[in-house]
Image (cartoon, rainbow, N blue to C red; front, side):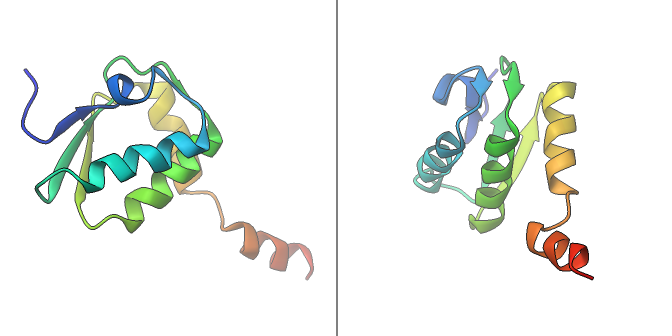
Length: 98
């Protein structure tokens, strides 16, 4: 059963979350949904690219809504966590120059 303010991401984009720009377009769509709490259902999603994950997490930080992910497959969850915990590239450049 789909709840109000629940979006099945694979229906809005495609099962393969691969193009960075797709995350931006997806969050532009979310901005127009009423309510402050949005459930993003990853049911049916098969894979995610690192670039999509980076843009998804960036847009998630920028939006003025609470985003709750549900039904996230393990392979997608692990990429999102990997990207979320990665050091900032600017910090990496500073450390490499020490």
